[in-house]
Image 1 (cartoon, helix red, strand yellow):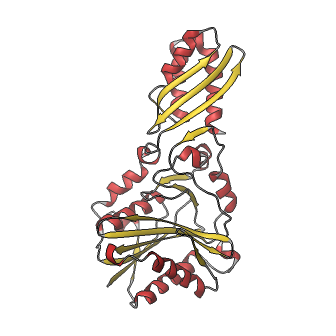
Image 2 (cartoon, rainbow, N blue to C red):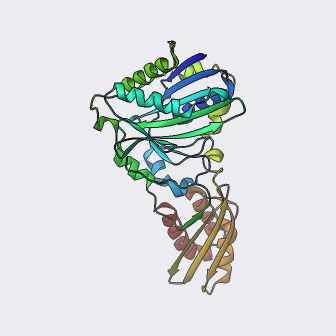
Image 3 (tube, rainbow, N blue to C red):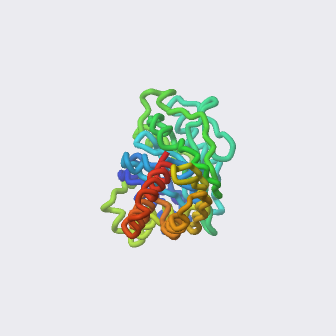
Length: 334
């Protein structure tokens, strides 16, 4: 059985996820591949998740935190340089999910940490989760990737992964929060590099072979013909936001000029339908607000832009539109 070990020096999450897709789509299906990598500050959501439900997208943008959507399922996770991410690619007929977990468990054991597999997806030390996984399968190959908490910033994990509910009725998968722990709590000398080396050694020991580690960087990967295609997809707004399952946003408030009961139906991150119930005397205002929001991207920038256009086109409505805009933007960001 052929083995390959790849280790990325790149911390751009779109690039690393693109590299995963390149590995899955392009590399030899008859080879067991281990890929180790880590990301700059990023929230990674599963393929069927809603970013507005899972994370504070406005705070992430303000703080320069990446949003990435992976091809596989599972829940939302926060990555920073305190995470070590692993990917296993195996031939379909020789895929052994338990073996992959055992390799990680053996690596941690060699670092003095007694980890166990928990359910189908996770690993834990005692009662605390230290790793989560997701999976993907094709006709001739299978894919298992996960993250290990080494020294992640738990405060930021809470900052970005605990959003206000927004009264969203959303389809798709919601994350279940768990009690988590960093591996440095069990071995204060562990680092990304020492953990990576332990996983590499456990991988080679499990398969009874030794192979050279291939160090990957942007220059070497850009030589691959299909990698940029995968990178462009991962970085694209339509992939990260537009693939969001259909959801609705229902909010209401009272202004001096009337009650607004707003229903937004959003599909592929575009506001498709707007229903406004109101006792406002100015019916034209309600119609104008509805028309302004239809076919708008569900982003603060686009909503504000559409409402600014409305104010310029109909200055007699500007005061009420400003009230509505300030309220709606606050509801989308809190």
